[in-house]
Each structure stands twice: as structure tokens, then as C-alpha cells.
Image 1 (cartoon, rainbow, N blue to C red):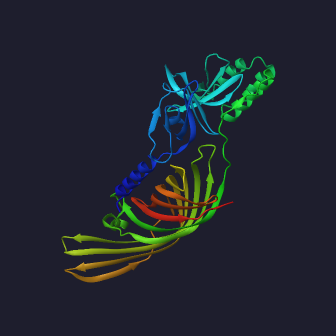
Image 2: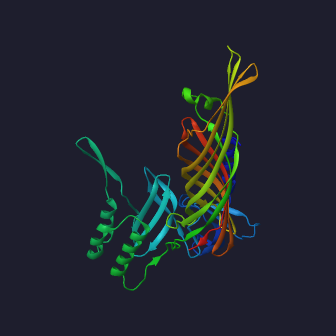
Image 3: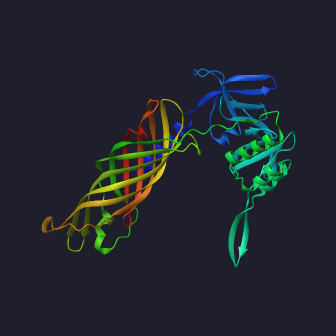
Length: 414
């Protein structure tokens, strides 16, 4: 299978999977006293700040309606994130966004994400929403540029919490994060308001889970020429047409969930023993002497395949499509290489030699992309099926390895 075709198929599969929605129970507020209950599409922070996709029923027949911050006051996922419509100053213009409401108290804290990164904001009482910023500032020392965090947000927090000298002092060690800002805002509220509790809306981050289990696969592997320059000693590699081999792999898969980044994201490390086989024939014509030089090459490699991948689940359910991206490093611990060299004159062979010196490197490295599915067998047991494509360098100058693998893993929760 040619690389562009495979990559195209993976991109199409990923795009199809990405179109899948994840509707969760929630409600939206159109006007004071006008609340609609139903299901809201749970997407990333950037998308959630721009629109709310609402559906009254989740039976597949409900109409989906997209609301902008200008159309509704707020929306919330049950026992989870809460978004409110607010005007904020964004770079050089005012923007109307859905802000994630982290904590409501004497000082409110908000959050949103856009193409420029993460943004935190604060408001005291009914006052103006103020940005909490931490821009990098350049400093020049002896001709060298150093970047240093400005931490302007600390001065802003000191101003907002000035009614409590103790809390104001503690802002010097506050980080610009959900956890740190919620903690300091809650402490300030408790210090200056004793007759009313603050409300923390932040979604509780799920626990980190670790899974370990066997993984096995079948691989279609082949070499591909990526350059035309080879030394005289290896001239025959320039004309080789490599045939694909079909080989097995087996090993262990370790998966770690990353709820602090995104509850659908995980990092996976697979270590497997792979076999890699391929064959090729190279022919060179000597037009002057009617001589044909033929090289028949075959090799079998066994390697430790180390793959580190990030996986993102595109929907939540019993069958969860995923997209995959990562890298790999292979250590080849055994190679059987044979090159049969034959010389033909007027169609008759008069010279035959066999060489077994391995010209290939022991290390191969590259990138891996793919798509797959996670099947939920029961609450704590899953089965994963992945289709991956890996392209690697290092085996030999101007040659790269290509691996199309179908893998099955059965991870167990530790």
C-alpha cells in the first residue's frame, strides 16, 4: 500500500470520527426564569467558549441547535462545567464569549481558551471583569536574550484581595491555574464573608488510571527509497523494488490516562518484539559488453519496538473511536541478511557470489499516526483495536522503513 493512500485513509477516518458528538445532560438559560433542560455537546475548551450545541432529546431524533453567547445567558453540564455569557477585552477588541465559571464568591474567577492560549479573569462584586495575565518579557544581558515571566496577575490579585492582608500576601505564591486560583479565591471569601458560602463550579478532575496488558499485531512492512544517491559499494540499492512482508508482533502495552489535560486523552507506551522481512531484486545493464548484473536481496530482522503515543477519544460510549499520534524507536537485535550477486553474459550466468555482511543500522526511529477504537467490555475492562502507520529513518541512508500494523490490546486496570 502506498504511503499517500494510507495517510489519506487515516485522515478520512479521523475526520469521520471527529464529527461524532458527545452529548451530556445539562441545561441552558435563555433569559432569567427561562431554563431549557436537555443534552449539550461536550467539546473542547476552545469550542465551548464560542458556542453551545443543544439537543432536547438524546434518542437520535432531536433537533440540534447551536447557540452563541449573544443568544443565551449561560449553560451547564450536570455536576460539571458551567459557562456564562460575558463581554471580555481580547487583544485589541471586545469579544463576546462563554466563560467557564470556576468559582462564585466575593471575587469570581473565570477561564477560557482560544487560539492564543489560556486566559483567566477575575471580577469583584459587580465590577469590571479583569484579566489575569502572565506575559513573558525579554531581558538583554551581555547580548543574550532572556525571557522572564512578568506575573502581572499577582499585582491584580493583591488589589482584589486587599480587604484581607493575609490573603493578599499569599498571592505572591499563587500560580495561574484552576486549582491555585480557586483555592486563593475561596480563602479570601471565607476571610471577608462569614454569612454565605462560595460556590465552586469547576469540574472535578477524574482520577488518573493506569492500565497494563498484552498487545499483539500483524504488520505489513517494507522499505522505500527516499533518495537517489548511494555509494558505489551499495549501488544496487538505487534500483531495488522492495516487496512487502507480513510479520507478527507481540508484547506489552502500558496506558496512563491524562485527565488534567483532557479526560479523553491518554498516553500509551507499547514495547513489542517485531519481525521485519523484505525482499528485493536489482538489475543493472552494461550496454557495452551485453552484461547484466543482478542482486537478489533478502533479510529478516528482529527488533525491540518502543512506541510512545498520545491517544484522543473522539466520543464517549461503548465503542469509542480514537486518533493516534506519536513516535517510535526500534533496536534491532538480530538480522539475517543475504545478497546473491549474479553476472549474466548473453543470458548465461558465469559468476555467482553470496554476501551475508549486514549493511543496516541497529536503530530505527520515526513517527506513528493512526486511528482505532476502544471497546468497553464492562466498567473496568476495555479492548483496543488500532490501525497504525509508522515511517522510520536510520536503517540506511536514503532508505526508510514503512510499517502498517493492525494491533489488538487487552489492558487491565492496575
